[in-house]
Every structure is written in C-alpha cells, then in structure tokens.
Length: 158
Image (tube, rainbow, N blue to C red; front, top):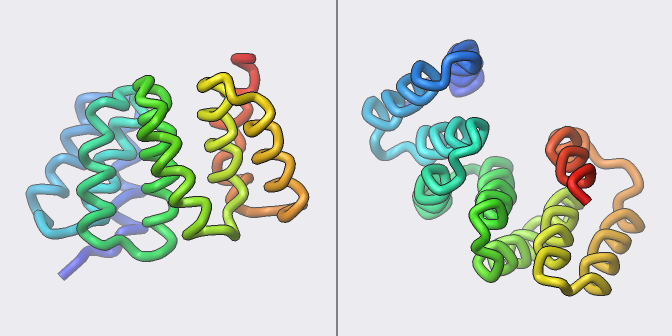
C-alpha cells in the first residue's frame, strides 16, 4: 500500500538544506516502495533540485514507465525534459516535451520549457512561436505559477 505522499514528501523536503539526507530520505522510499512510480519521481525530483540532472533522468524515466497519476506524469515529463536540456541532450528533451505538450495541452509551462529547448537548438523563430501560442491559449495558469521560479531563472540566463 502506498503512503500518504503529501505527508511523506513534506517530511522529506525538510532535509533540503542537507543534500545527503535529502537523497537518502527519498532513496529509502524507493527501497520501501520498489514498485511505486511516485517514489521514483520524488527521488528524481530531489536529484533535480540539487542540480544533479544526470542522476535524475533515469528515475524520471522509470517513474513515467511505472505509471504515475496524470498530474504527476505531466510533472515528470516536464521535469525530465528540463533535465535533459540541462544535460545538453537537446533532441531527447525536444521529443519528451513535444510529446508532453500534446498529451497535456492544458499546461502552458510545458510549452515554455519546450521553447527553451528550441532556443538552445538555434530554432529561435519556432521557440518564440511556441511560447507565444502558449501564452495566448492560457492567459492565467496555475502550472506556470508552479514553475515560475525555474522559468524566471532560465529567462535571466538570456
């Protein structure tokens, strides 16, 4: 039986200031719940938070294959695409984000992350078009709020 993930993840993120404890906490969840897609997602998320994208990628992939809820599948696909981008695996990032954009059209943040990949691939017209269409389709969206800090950080890099 799966735990109450809201409580479990909240407890885990209390270790955010200690990277070793953070990873150990979420790694232990994957041992306690080896068939849980959510446990794999949370470990990937912790690695991602610490800037260890290469380590997060296989856990995101496993989580997606293991069957997340629709909500967490959308998060996993977006975060996998972003991690692939940060690992300079742009073609893979483009594919996962383009697939996610089709599967979750209600999430403009996916289009925004896809536009960053397209920009990195020097496909600037396509990148701009992608993000502008996302904004036009979703003038106010809670998922943009969820990823606002990450998006602002990436925008500052330009």
